[in-house]
Image (tube, rainbow, N blue to C red):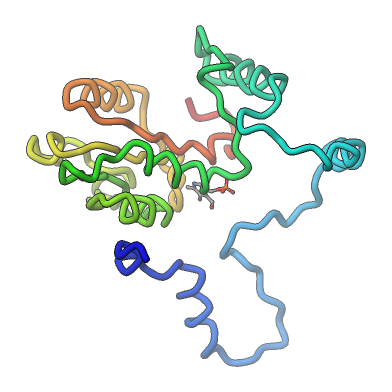
Length: 216
Ligand SMILES: Cc1ncc(COP(=O)(O)O)c(C=O)c1O
């Protein structure tokens, strides 16, 4: 067995289940705010497309997915984030869930021979840590507190730490606080990544949940 499995911590939902087990019975039905499962029906047009596509279930999907999907994702990136020169064939890889992608990406990026540090916000989405441990990396947790604006204080990271950093996870809007990183902060991080030669994994899975104007 991979000895790094011993380094993994229990998934938070397991911990939550244990905490719930001692609760007194109630006649009220709880509002589950735990796993984040949708509470609204899937849109009709999505269900329709799925129904219309069942004949294709017999085909093995390719890893790259269908070109039309990559093309549509590329177009969306341009519309939503005003990106230019997106090449869907080489820069877009559709995945079934970002958790699996975050895990696999970390295995590909981290070189365990060089005492790798992987930086991540704290609190964090647990796969950042699990993927780091199984890739042979050392997680370094950057506190997100009121005092730091609920995102990490990157100015507080030492030069020694940046030198050993191979991967930086950022989450904007952040889970669980929703705090975003500004454009200036993102630019500064890209400059640091260039200077110290590390990769940024920017988890933006909540970018489409906002009140008035989309976070940029
Ligand atoms: C910050 C963050 N990233 C990634 C994920 C993974 O989402 P999925 O695997 O459903 O794409 C979640 C799910 O809760 C999350 O909170």
